[in-house]
View 1 (cartoon, one colour):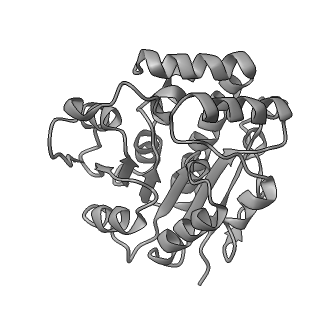
View 2 (cartoon, one colour):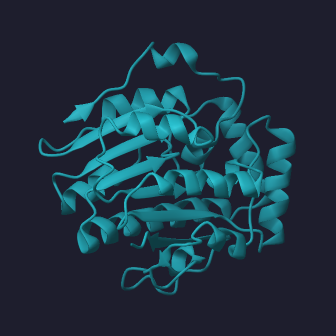
Length: 270
């Protein structure tokens, strides 16, 4: 089933005067669900760093591999996907429910346009469930409370924070958010994270220009070591925190060039 989470018409609350990260990302992935202000911001980033398109594509590929691993190999049947962005091909629930038709997925984003598309497109198998929450990762209490309507916190949950923690500029605050969310989930739950890294000077320069000129929420690339700190107290799954292209690539894609984005997956012990 699909569980709508509506209040007012989201189209009435879309701000087209300021870029939104989900819509800029959609533009970089070749989508059409964006506005001129998003395209302008995306074009500036691409002009400064053409590799951004490959980064967007490869990070999305890692997300699919992560969900396939968690649902298909580990048997995780519940997913909390925060900062999901606009629907594309092979969204979290589609990948998970191919492996486990009864999987339950909660998507979280704070863009009304994403909500509008999610309600129309994020349909579920009859056995499972998908739900959408309009909320902010910086308010984990609300996220957890709303998600509890769909997810059972007595059973393992996969927490997906893919490309979202860079929107929390303070590193300690970002770590606190992760800890708060994971503390609410039972042993056997998993955390999946990726974010942009500061290893490529051209990438970091492009992000600085984006932050200075777009008016959007700034994005903060981090070191791979900082990304690894999000997994403190958890059991990292092999191969650990690595560039997204190196996280369990499918056969034939082992030689894809690295991008300035790293992530990993870890299990909550106990």
